[in-house]
Length: 244
Figure 1 (cartoon, rainbow, N blue to C red):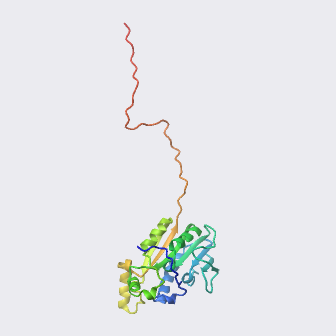
Figure 2: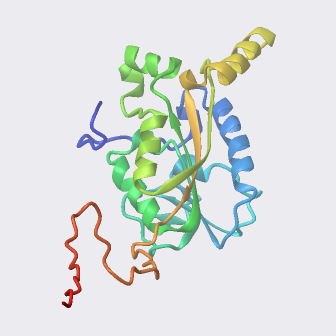
Figure 3: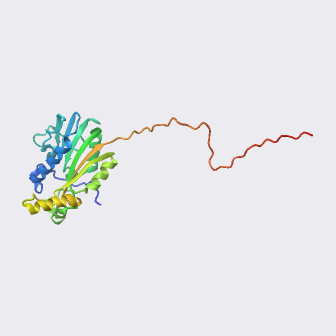
């Protein structure tokens, strides 16, 4: 298993068209995002990274929405995603699309999101699956995906569990890594998503932040006297003296 953190410089993706079959991938991701955010409530929505900011979130009831990336146009807040300028527990919904694939320190990125999310805040996260046709093609042609770092969805879920997130939804799509044209390809795509989801190119996870109280609740019940288990107990037996 490769180490999550790397020292090499990664080139961020700034547009969906830079990805393989990006236009179709954006449409599929948009549909899943619409379903995930339609029932999310709160005060602040944060979209991290260029690909996340290019998704429409008008179906979300949260009105205040922030586009955050390191640079670019139509960005409301320019910042390093690994060091976000937000106070703790201030964001109700965060969308992170294909940013772990191009992050030099995905652990720190997730820790920052965990820090700024409110209790019961929601994280929508998507990325590439290395155990797929896309992952195989990446191994065969590394020069085309030089900056992509593929982490399995199960590994990402383990990271989220360690941070205290509860997985509410997990889906896979884009089985053949190409826009299905014609009934045969559509059948293969639908069959792959239904029965071979582990090998789909893209995973989509909706997670909710949970926090366990650090102070344990003390029980009010107490024994009035010490109970000795499995120990021999010496008893003092009184004998009455027989009078003559």
